[in-house]
Length: 563
Image (tube, rainbow, N blue to C red; front, top):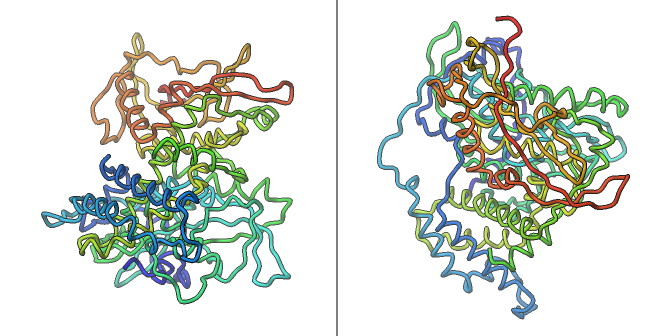
């Protein structure tokens, strides 16, 4: 038993948007509302990366490898018998039981005490946290939030060009009011695309659609579902596998709510997803279509103060045939002629193997997160089929999603494709890291000068070095720089304004070390790049040459112009 497909559709594609004329409060006032959650973990888990024990990951990997072996041609499977998860259960039940036993030891399945209410929190504070949870699930998801070029049609003979975007809504319902807020745009939403609308994307880079048999949290539908609904189901499962607490948000949470000028009242807070299509003339798209959407998203996110054989198979099968359509807007590519014609590829097979292994572990972790949501307290025999079904899916995964989430797994890669993905990969590693990429208000005391008020940010620089050439690019600012470091004095003192993570003054060197540790702990690929990796690179002017690709990170301070 999982979440019914109809329930997923209801939480992701509402039949209609509430009439905004009936909303008694303007959207600016909604943002200033205060909510109290009955279970504080539903709030705090938004910005915490789920942890999974090594034993669980190892057991899941062993089960996947066993099923991959059983499915291999060398095993001589009888062609008269269908090769399905159900057919493999008798041969993999022991490994599945071992995994279920480990999952049943998860403390969250056996709560020892009543949930504790959360402290009051501003809805405006929730908005970037929820948006970060959605955007970090997959790079294509983040692109969808920004908007991608597409054509829409209600009939096959009439197509309209425009922007298709994923609208992430926060819906509140009380006895006296009901309203929705588009988290990315900061105002009430527009009308959603009808689920029977036909969509053609300019590039076929979209999220890899799982069949209904592969969706672990959805029950099979009685008839084929429309394409948009299937995409939303796949997207929803991707979100939940990355941040499991989002399942509760999509189902609806009971809260206590007070808006400015009102009283405390009981209500429901729910996250909703849907597709929005905005028609545009094709000639206008490069100038106003994507950029208009992506700037709002960036403001919300960055301005807020296996066995060896199995791993080789993964690396060999991993391909991203179509690059992302829309670059991350915060990266304005420097020297387009250089960035769009320079290709890099990993030169060391061991490095590629390491990155492929890390991608494998991430997919294993996502599958385990989904399995944790199943009713595993029931007898293990009832869970074996669901566990084998998920392992079966992993065994045939082409790692399209893994390669789309981390570019260096592609055989060859343009620099202008690498830069936005690196920025996204760093920002998804931790909510704290994402905030610091955009900058936080701070007061700095450096030797020989007075206290200064301004913005402190984590500056991440990509260095591409080869022979006599060397480029340094500030990822977040999108510009070339002369040095990989900001030049701040390591013994300067920083006082961060309004930070619960850093309430006391800190040395710059200590603050920087803590920030890098929070990123590297959840993004080992980034840690690897900070050590430097050997690459080969190609431009129009010369053939493949050896080089090094390295990430550097340091704190940069910009004082206010008017103090």
